Every structure is written in structure tokens, then in C-alpha cells.
Length: 192
Image 1: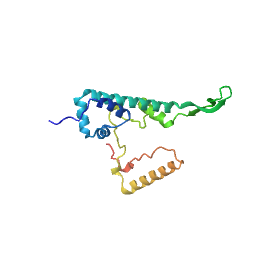
Image 2: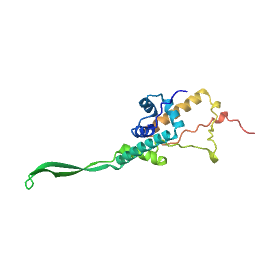
Image 3: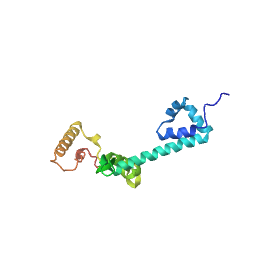
Image 4: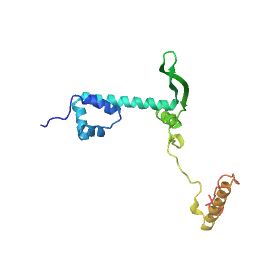
């Protein structure tokens, strides 16, 4: 059995690494081991895994706080100090000369990101809409006219007429409903 490369002070070190945002692969490189070794250390030394999670949670909390600051906007005071000679003491002292309040307005992208993650139902980019037929069943497409009974000439005439209607409608000149093709009466079998 080989000696372990794990050291008792690694949990303290891994908290700092995780807080800095290092991945497990990067941590492994810092420890001089392969990434699977870091995984083994987490299994064999619960304090190591807990320390890694603690550091990650701290980093995540800091990122959330920074993002929230960008969502709200950031205001701060900038103070200008100068050294001046105090005539009474004949010593130089720092004197506040100017206070300026500065402001960075809220960041739209940060706001959108925040809302998409905090309120996904209201702020998602895509909406799913499902169409159903009668009673929630599938949509049925039914053909009202049997075009197979039309001659080639009659069919060509009907297609040309419909194409002309679509062109007029696209130009805004026709608001009539689509043409309903009825088979010629001569081709409809008579009921006796």
C-alpha cells in the first residue's frame, strides 16, 4: 500500500480554493494529483468534502450578492482628501475636500438573468403551447372535398383561382375566406 498524499491541513486549503472559484480539476493540479484523487479524498475524508462545499457555498453567495447589486444598481460616496498644514499645530493633516455620490444604474442583463432564474414561469424565453382537438384529443384533419373526382383541367383552374386569392390577400386586397371547392354537379352520383 502506498502512502497517501492527503494532509490534515487540506480542508483549510480547499475552503480557500473553492472560495476562489477553482474547479476540482484545478484543485487537483494545485495539490499535484490527478482529479480522481481529489474525488477519493472527498469519499475517505468527509471533512475535506465538507470544506469544499463550504468554500463553494461562500463563492456562490458572493456571486449572488454581486449579481443582486447589479440588479439594484450601485451607489457609493467618493471622498477626496488632501494634506494641509495646520497653522496651530504646524503639522500636516488630512482634510476632507470633496464628497461625490456616484451611481451605476441597474444592469438590464442582470435583471433579466435574475428574473429568468427566480421567476421562470413568468420570464422564460420560450413558451410551450399545445393544441388539442375536441375533448382534449388529437387534432383531426378532415378533407371536406374529394379532389380525386375533379378532372385535371378543373383542378388546375381551382388551384389557379386559389393562388390568385392568396396573392390578393397578401397584398391586403382580399379578406374573403378560402375558396371552398365543390365537385361539379355532373360528377356527383345521384341518389335514387
